Image (cartoon, rainbow, N blue to C red; front, side, top):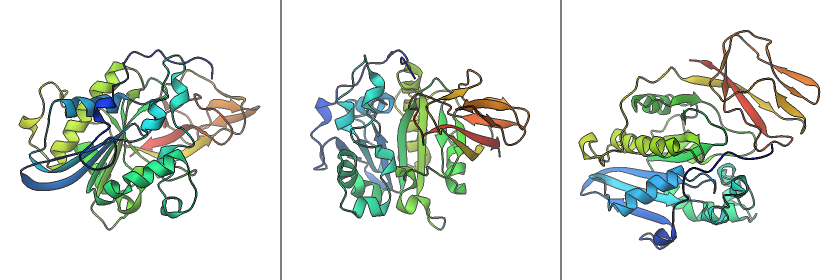
Length: 316
């Protein structure tokens, strides 16, 4: 896909946060006076998605601490972020491989090396100890915010209880690797750990920063780290009645570089009739599998054979 969306947000200056109190660069702990949850908030899992990093940097600069428990704030793929060039903003997503596909134990424990695997191994102890994980992301294309929950009921309920405008998306992950939010005990049906992934909006849209701030603070309140009245002024947006979750049932994977959507889809479109053509792929038509099919995160920004171009879902 040629061109890129305009960059309307300034990349945060992370030099101030390279040295930390954890012994791991760009990872900061803040503890409250009372016992409480063990929360991990991550940003920059992809180096060109810096709305979440802006929120974390602002929170650190304000000297914020939770009232209860411990909150760890981690800037993840800083090596990719440091390559960011506003003239080519899509090129700094990762260095060697997708940081959010390396979270299988066999990969983390194996001999293979990459910039992303090395960094994931550094961060693994913080992920292992977290009772609550919020992973802050953004999207290639303009779209309303999404909260991705995995398939466990406890995560879906937690996400809906935040009362944001974000669409809750229930999915089982990716075939090409394990996400951080699906790692280890976060995907244990018998456990109690919470993990959500926020897609805050288009990467460089200022509204994505507002969504990241709002969701971060609501997550901390819901997890028990602070009371709503203790949230920083101006971070919380008005409460919203969340829409019913969308359950992903199918993924459309490109078979060729000749993949084209049949319309200008931004995500969230509901295609009324089964069998409606939504794309072509080297002459093959791609159609909706059922009535009232919801399109989730359509994008050709990273088009190549084997890459998911859109997810298909239905309302729960």
